[in-house]
Image (cartoon, rainbow, N blue to C red; front, top):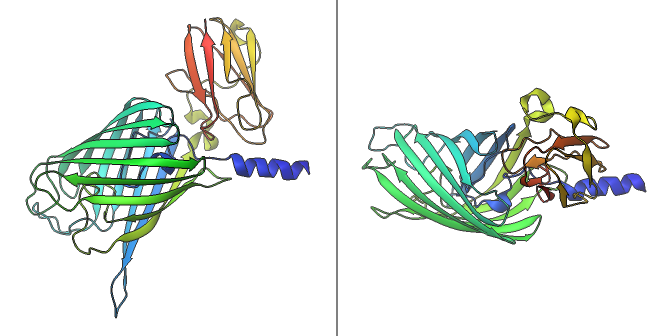
Length: 353
């Protein structure tokens, strides 16, 4: 019976790595998400439509996104679409393959926590030969997250190839920790075009670090430009799905993580003055108070790996195995909020006097 209980606990508790959940990002908006340091994020979006009879042929619009987190605030990545908005454009492009290289700096906020988040995303669109950029904001309260984005392009994909600007907005509404709905809309502002839109039902997949969504949209690609203009031809709605695959490199190469490894009690002359148990997929003591120079020890009592990942610059732990522990000394007064990376709903605070 104990083994059955542990298996059910593992199934119910698992959630995607922090900042990768589709419950916090509409299909056509990147939001302010930045992978944790040492996490490579791969997203696969597949949309399609079925042409009218008599052929009823299926036309596919696959998109791929890969991004890596460096530290807690910066990511670099690329998006690739095999069927772009336009095959030919004013710059003489002959390919339908669209590639966008981007970086992202989350200037403020932490995804999933109440309040505002702000991120800046510079990019380069190889098909349009355009320097693009986006400033994204989001606001979270309870189960609702609102999104907004302002975009600029030096050379727009299209007949004119002129510089352009666009705006986008959307929302996520979470019914519970595992199911949510989302929608967004975005459009170039001059000249006006058919707006790009999307809607989705989003899921966290229990027992895995993945999220999944069923989508409807009229956008051909996931790039900044591709999500700013809806398809004029075909006018059919594209249906499909998105699947997120976060790869936690620290699990395969512990040396990738630069933060301290778990240490023994009293390391570096620090006395462990507070104990926090990880049990029932939560931190048993959500807030602990210590003095500067003292340490906190976290002990994992669950059958799952957990981490202690601080929201600021303070280095955190590598994955802590079942029955393992981690000790960290705090040298400066302050408030240190933290979470578990594989299970972002696990949150706690250390107050250092």
